[in-house]
Image 1: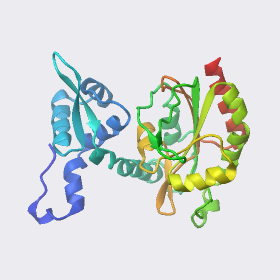
Image 2: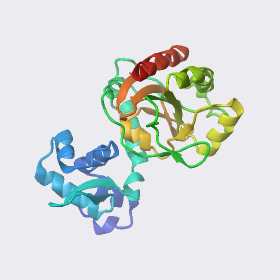
Image 3: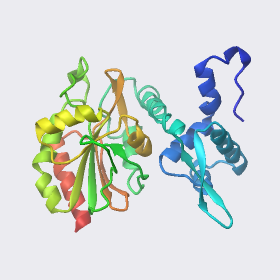
Length: 292
């Protein structure tokens, strides 16, 4: 069971946070609810956890206002577990932990915006094929919020990129980080091929952790015909466990391209992306095949 905070640490924010999510199972439950697994049986099956322990942890997270119980069936009443605003605020912490482990535990400590194709993180991304993206919206550069998946299109291409140098300058030594360079080129290539994507009934969305106002300036300057989504709160990163790297005091998405169908299932993944023009061509081919 989660431990109470000792009186000597009552004013320590780290201790208070650890009392809520410092337990192994509690963190993994937050991870799975972010991925769209909200019901007791689905959580138990995915985590391979006993019903008793799962019940205890769920009750603790509800009491801590990280999760809320939402009825989805009446007679008998059954509930599913959804992240609250408090719980969603934990997602950047979860992604930062993943980033730390990818670099320092599963990797060799090198700062990189890409990955070896045989690495654990590459395997994790490729295992997304067949998974369904949970329903949520992200801030869009043109204002408001937008679903990452266009339900009116046969397929949606999500291309994730680290950051563009306009309008904010890129972090110092950005060019020295493997895989970081090429974001403006990637956006331009998707822009130039956008007519072909649209003709095939395929939606295109770019995603970075930059703020919508920054993306707005870039989209206007480059005359982008597709939306740029901001994952500044790590909702997409947590939902898909996307790889990141830390630069300029912030987490940046590593370059990846995903193709999803209208049912929100991931049908194709490119990661790592080492040849940007080829990645755009491949995305068009794979997405067009779904609109067949």
